[in-house]
Length: 402
Image (cartoon, rainbow, N blue to C red; front, side, top):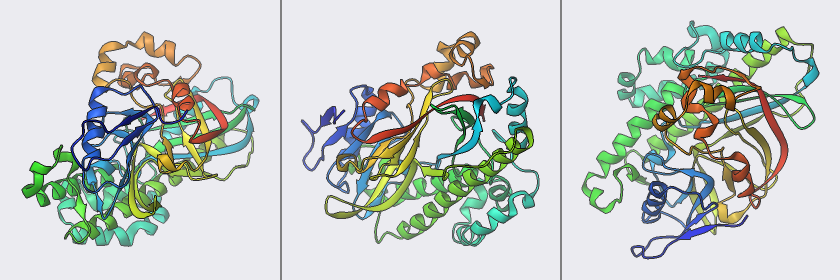
């Protein structure tokens, strides 16, 4: 489907259009998109993916091109959050009939929720690739030390850990009954601390200009600002941390499968993509900073991952390089209701019914992640036929939640 909605009527002078790939948008998200479009730093237009929904300041599912400036709250606090997936040589008939022991083995091997590895040396090899950047980060920004308990240890022991919320590890089957491993996580506690620190700095730097902003959370750093280069450095480090974190988790999960399943090989190049991040790109004749907040890069022929919810299909896709979307697409199903609303609306019986056939937690602690709290992933995919082609369709048989 092409762009379904364009917002730019009755807007203040200088407002750019907002091109939206769905008609299913809540009013609060529409207002956030309008707010972003009013900023003087926006280039060409703002694009909203079909999974768009309200975020903090900036809308989840938005692609924001900025000239000489970055909005820290648009990047958010889960910097570099994204997906990792790999196909194995295993087939469905090589999985055990009872998948619960396999799920529990993954949960024992990969710390989930607030848990982390018990020893600083647990993921030492991976941490070493990030160590010099971490030392520089803490030296320049000692305030980060106050936001983390034992920060020098925390960022190391959280490498190769899942976290909570909507993060997950899944064992999936594709259309040919081939077994895939797929996971979703980001930059953990250190990314959160970096995000919060620079969001507050941006607000402080713009105190004298806040009356010009439609939302305080849209405070931004401009090139030349005292903190601009520091933020670029910090956010790129956090994005690399997130990539390494997923890579290490994948190694741990594959190791568990090797202990419990017949011998196998990894048959496809692992896809490791961010969906909360900022990057320099060229669009419509300008070099810009592109912030994808709940969106993935879908350059021509680029592979990406679009997950559904706990009981729904997920997709491996190939980008079509659509310029109107800034070569982007949706990052998932997108929430239809808040976590609080989901807990009020649904019961454990609902969760069991909607995740039937999936080996996963079915307790009240994950009711807010129930499929009914999310948009229909198949409708999301229909709305972005101009953005990506589907390469593989996956259905989870095991889902580990944080």
